[in-house]
Image (cartoon, rainbow, N blue to C red; front, side):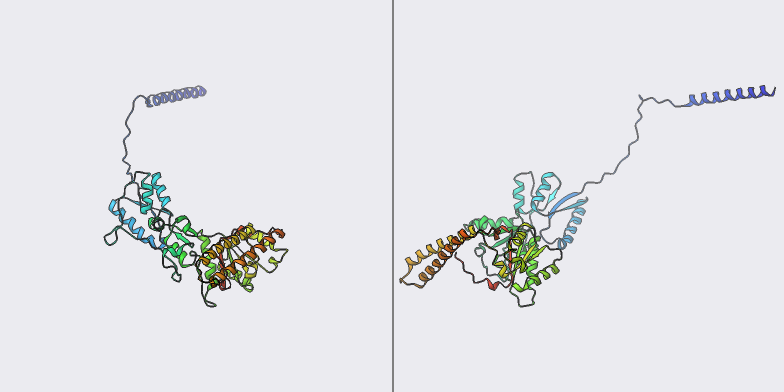
Length: 397
């Protein structure tokens, strides 16, 4: 009896559970994908993109950073929008930003504007004025202790420009040289770009340009430091890559130690007496040619053993002889007396050059030494201590 009661109770519970499940299924919502209900929209606040202003720092960046920051803040306040300042090293890079649409406004040299304006649709917004005039000047800076008083006197010297697209720092000077009847490509012995007014001024002040720079100091006044600094600054600016420093024979090691103390990371090679012994000289000179040294230091007598190539020396002698023969012809035409002193002096000099050329050609036939010549060493900067030892060397124009 009791068992039947349990069975009956279980059946009742099962029926109740079934009824509850059916009720829940009837209450479940049906999804109709054909009915579309609009989703309420949300307003997103879009910030205006920044005005991108491109500029190059031709002056020391640390000194101009404050002025440029104030300019950016002023522009932002006037326009009511953020301003992004884009610094670049050269005018060519600024032009590239404009061409790619990566800059909205640029501060350009007039030369860079003329180059770029011919290729792209750009508009000139403003020109700087000084004392009510928009014209400005180009200055040629020379060492205060130098002797040059005109541009013509810089012929054959080393010169430094600011930027190849700078009107005042490059283009105007080349135009002026053309007006003088000169070829800007050959007027200077060599030229470089610093992309900075500060670096250009420093190059002149530190003796990195103008090939006749002389450090005239008394003993202990810091001449060695200036020579070492000029080598490393020249390399930093890309004006030279491998320098040779010639010092009195007894100062080679001392100079090397001072060099390393001033520039601990510099890669220098100091020549010893043993390096220039006959059986080791070629190996040492090969090390100069095949490795990337910041500087090589050697004594005066060792420097004298690093020879020019025979072909170059022959050519120099032959050119000198030709120039002397032409000078002698003109002097004989102009001389009032047969034994004029100038005529006799040139005749003597011409005779010595011919004797040296004959001796050199004889040595060429005998000498089988395959030592690397000076012009093959990769040296592009020569610094000489005690330069008075070399100042009276003869030459023929």
